[in-house]
Length: 85
Image (cartoon, rainbow, N blue to C red; front, top):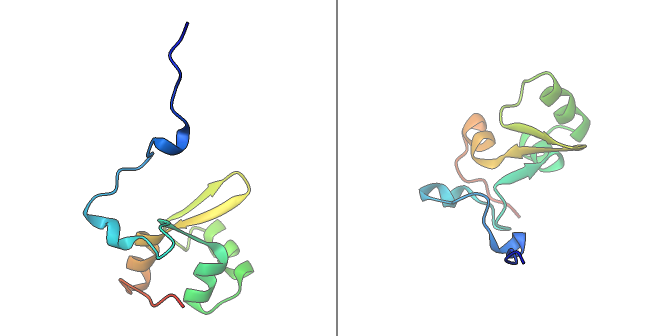
């Protein structure tokens, strides 16, 4: 008989260290394409196209979803802590 494994939610996949302040108010370490578009003042399609061309750092495709590393995007735009209203 094998031991039961704990549910995935109880196992953190990323250990958060001193850079924890880079997390958003929702606790996520990533931005969605529409959030990056809002930060940049452009449309979501423009963000998708720029990411495909490699012009936006920190882009990661997970299946059909495109996410962006929050710390990388913030460093790239030179704004360490944007106000998220």
